[in-house]
Image (tube, rainbow, N blue to C red; front, side, top):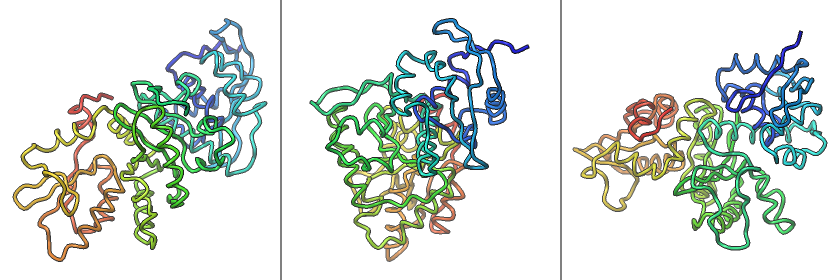
Length: 384
């Protein structure tokens, strides 16, 4: 006999449904972002069979399977079956309407580009959800461009790029925001958000500069910031960060290289370490608090020098890569290579999961010191 399943808020099922209501589909291989991979895959497998599901919105019983999986290996994708769409009513009164507007009649193209696009968006949403960032378009206030207003919430919030087109209607090229997945606001700042997954990010130069300019206008009208100067770059692991940096070193057009497009680009791995880093990067006044935690005011630099560093004491320079900023990392390496004589000992602070990547990027030109993530989270007042 089939039992009755209730979808409880905060459960793995509830989280996955929230994801699908926005991204439409989600890669099976990335379920581990939401928690224990084995547990969640077992849940998805169970819901591929017909079940009795109690809807709390109207107390009815829906007899259907929830999920269908298609594709093989790394391309395997999870979607909601058409007969189960009413479960979105248990999420929010506007969830089903939003979903059907984004994915009319629950139909998806088999084109791999569109599937990967949805997967990039889904993974980004999953990471933000797990870092306690609001991601739901039908809950967040709508962005606008009519006048300068304080529209965004006071807490961290992520807006999907798909919705930017609605702000500009027909006047904006539809493809301008294709490469990015969205825009993340936090108290004191904002990030353009990209997800390169397993691929090396190849920036489009002038096209990306145009997209950043349009984002800056959205931010100015809705949050009061003058421009977007920082970005988040998600990728499966630190090897992607290393390969992205190496590819950038080969660029002959340095004026349109990615570290010229955005002043800071924080690499965030698509895993638990990345979720913790995301919590730091969306914490109010995180940079100053991080610097105060690491260094005393006496050894921090006063003003600007010929290269970037975070502290200096007794012929030893200190540089923090705890924020994962690979754009700043490029500038540091170039500064070290351009010096005619040794600057002294240069020590880079990093998390354990960043160690190997930095070791390969700098070779033996710097000393690396590892700092545990839990110590940083506790010192900043951020708790898992």
